[in-house]
Structures are given as C-alpha cells and as structure tokens.
Length: 453
Image (tube, rainbow, N blue to C red; front, side, top):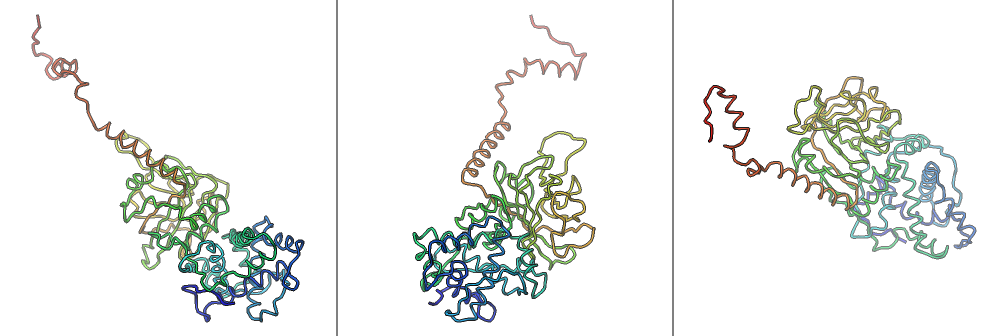
C-alpha cells in the first residue's frame, strides 16, 4: 500500500515521516496486539488495548509513545515481512531533533485524522524542538522523555485518542486491526486543519502546542478549538487600538477562560523578537489586586517553547487595573497596567497601560510561577525592558459567554447614555429655587431683597 497524497510533506532527505506513515498500522498491530497469522484473539485484543489506552498515568502514555515510535523507525529499515512484535522497554540511546520533529508531525496527523478535507498543512514545530534540544543536534532519550513530561504531558493522550477513535468505528478485533493498518493508506485521503487562516499570531501549530502543555480542562478546550474552530478573537491591538481602555471596551463582561498573547522585541537588539502567552481561566477583570486560579500558566511560544506552571506558594496569578475616569482623588492610586506573578509594583511580567513597554523581571521576585527565564536570552537579575509590538486576547468559552458579554456591554452602554443626559424638568423653575436665593445671598449679602406681598 502507498501513502495517500499529503501536501507539504517534507522530502525524504530531511524527514522520515513518509516511512513512519507507511509502517504505522502494521507496527502498532504487531507490538501491541501480536496477531497470529493475521488474526488476534479476544484476550489478546483486550490485553493490547489495555497496554495502549488504559494506562491512566501520563508518564506511562508518553513512555509507550516514545518506545512505539522507536520501534516504528526501526521497522522502516526492514521489510514488511520482518515486523517485530517485541517492544524494547528501555529508554536508552540518543534521539535527533529531526526524529523528534517527525514524532510531533505524526501526533499532529493523529490529532486531525477525523478532519478529512482537501489537504494537510503540517505545523511549524521549531519552537518545541528548540525548547527540547537547546541548540543540540541529539539528546538522550531519557532527557527528552523528562522534558516532554514537564512541558507537553498531553502528547501521549493524542496517541491514545487516535487508537480509541479507530476502536469505536468497528465491532470486532479483525476490523479494528484493518482500521489501524489503513492509517493514511487511502490514495484519496487528505487532511487539512480548519484553523489554517487564523488572524494574528495564533497559528494552528501554536494552539496545538498550548493544548499539549496544559493538563486541566483548559487544555481540552484548546484541543477542541483546534478540531471545531470554537475559539474567538476578542481583541487585537492593530485592529482595535492599543491601550487598556481599548482592551476593556472589547473584553469587559467576558467571564470565561481567555488566552492573552503579546509579542515584543528587545529594546537593545530589535532582531530579538518573541511571543509570550498567558492562560487566564477566570477571564480578565478590572481589579485593584491580584486574582486568578491555579490553572493559570505563562508560556513562551517563540523563539523557544517554555512553560511556567504555578507553584502553589502564592496566588498572585494576574493583575489588571485601569482607573476609571471621574473616580475622584485617591492618595494611593493603584498602578494601571497588566502584570503576572511577583508582587505589587514588582511583578514578574509588567505591561504598561498604553501597551508600549513590557518589563520582565528575574524569577527570584516571584513565588507564584515556577523558576526559570521566560525568554531564552534573558540573563542575570536586571529587569529586561522590551517594546510591545502587538497584544491579542482570545476567548476560549462557549457561545453563551459571548452572548453574556454582549448583553453586559449593551447594558453598560445604556447606563452611560443615561448618565450623560440631564433632565431639565427635574430642576423646576430656577428663579423660584432655593439654590438661586442662596447663591444671590452669597454673592451680595447686602443687596436689598424685595418682599412679595
């Protein structure tokens, strides 16, 4: 059987993805279900399914995925009649960055296998590769496994979900094996993600990477957004304008999880650009103190993929405040802007209220998020000041959240119009009002007053 037409498939010199697809089904059936003469018994089927899908530990699923891919690559060097049914249980040896890239692309194809369309567009996974290999060409398989477990633990779930998807299409072990063996073997099979033309910085590959990094319900929401196009752009600075006022006019009233993206460049070296993201499960709020939940997260999407989860020691997850106009005098005004981690006026990340600059501080000032630099070229204890290029806010909630936000904003608009209108009838006749009499007396108390009789 030949692999179906796949657009943008890397050449054989730079990638082994085509070979992986050719041997995917046969290798999986051999190492997991161990068929005898092309058939498998019910006990063997249940045992193989348990080994693939019923492992609840994330570490076990990732380990099985790496071991399976290693067997898959070794199978590509053999003929189909030499398929081995033994899975080496040791995480020994080295893995190259090119091989890891193929693993990510293979998992991407398994994620979008249900989205059959007119072609597939493989995502850009270089930030993930750079984050795992740190400019090295090869790393030990054990080190890669540890990095995946800490950074993208949900990658093993992609493999499990695909196997379960194939299982639910059939009613017998033999049909299940045929389904597995037909993975991208149909000449007319082409896959394409429906999120190929998202505006702004949120590409399908970045959205998928974020889904792999998050362990809670937010990760499932992002993965659903990849599959069902259920993500909404609430605010984008080049379109709606920069600044906190413009931001609140677009996101106020949205009470579900949001993805806050902001890009920038170094003030000293304009060639060093980056893209950071913050997951805010409770949505953005205009408050004078820190808020958020333990599901908040800080992520570097470019140039390297870096994830900083909460530590649980402090709860200074996110701060966002803009002083309302006409609020009166305050002897101790709260700072206007958006911050993450750290403490008041000493935040780990601080974005000015006009979205012009951002300050990145050393992790020593922060106990809310994990230690480590959020940017690969951030060094030392001195704060790193950068210029903000763009800011985006994506809503991760349902359509109900958008409807509630629209209702809230409409109600606030009506209140604002009512406050601007003055009902002159409510003041009565100014000439007969006590206020006019008092003002006349204050301005000229010796003026004779005419007594009405």
